[in-house]
Image (cartoon, rainbow, N blue to C red):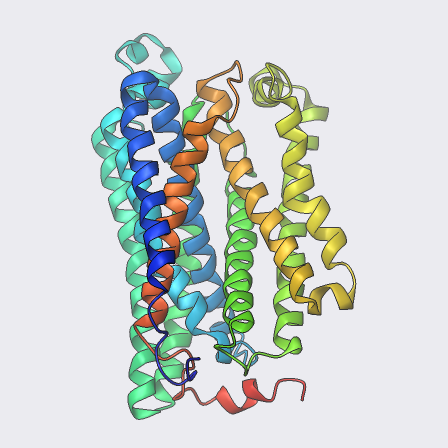
Length: 390
C-alpha cells in the first residue's frame, strides 16, 4: 500500500503488459484501416483524439475553476486532475494522425473543393497549412497551462509558500479565458468543419459542456480507483459527494446545450441547419443518436439524483462510466455522419482504435500520478480539505 505523501508505485507488470498490448492492437487496427478503409480509420483517430483531448482539457478547466473559486475541498485529490490534464499528448497524437489525410476527412481539403462557392469563400481559414498550424498552436497552449499549474503545485510542495497559490489563481483565471476561446476554435476546426456547409452558434458551448462533464467523470473514476485500492484513505464520502454533484451538474449542462441546439434548429426549420439532424436521424444513425442522450445524461442523471447515489462508490463508477461512453458516442456522432451518411456500424476497427488510445491514456495518467506525491503537502488549504465536512 502506498503512503499518500509519496508518488504512486508502478502498475503491476501483467496490467502494464495488457495496456501495451491494447495500444499495439489499436495501432495495428489504424494502420490496417488506412489501407482497407482510410475514411473510417482517420475518422476514428479524429474522434479518439478529440475525445481524450477534451477529457484532458476538462480536467484543466476543473483545476482552474477550483483555483479561481478559492475552493479547498478538492486539494486532497488535486494531483489527479493534474495528471489527467497532463495526459493531453494522447489526444494530440490522434489529432495529429489526421493531418496527412485531411483531404479524406474534410470536404474543404479535397481537390474539388474549389468548385464549391461556399468552400471557396472559407478557403482563407479552412486550408491545410493554416489548419495544421492552428492545431499545433492550440494543443501547445493547453499543454503550457497544464504544465504551468503542475509546476506551481510542485514548487509549493518544496517551500510551502502561499505566493504559489496566488500565482495559480492568476494563471487559472487566464486559463479559463484562453481555453474558452481556443476550445471553441478547436471544435469549429476539428469537428464542425467535417460538414463545412453547416453551422451552429451553440456548438462551442455544447463542446465545452461535454468536455467539462467528461473531464470530471474521468477524475472521479480515477479517485474511485485509488480509493478502492487503499492508496488514498484521506478521501471521504464528502469528497465523493462533491465530485458527484459536479458530475451531475456538468452532464445536465451538456444535456441543456444539446436540447437548446436541437430545439432551435427544429422550430426554425431552415434547410441549411436541419441537414445536420436529418443526417443523424436517418441512414441507420437514429438508434445511436438517441442512445447518446441516454448514456450522456439520462442514466447518469437518475443514478446521481439522490444524495446517497452521489456518495456511493459503485453508483458513481457506473454513472461516470456511462457518461464517458456517451461522450465518446457524442463526438462520434458529431464527426462520422458528415463524412459517412450511411451508417456502417461501430465495428471492431473503431473499438480497437478506441481501446488503443484508452490504454495509452491510462498509462499517461499513471505516469503523471507517479511523478509527484499523491497529496500536495505544501498547499495551505490541505488541512481544510482533509477535514472536509468532518
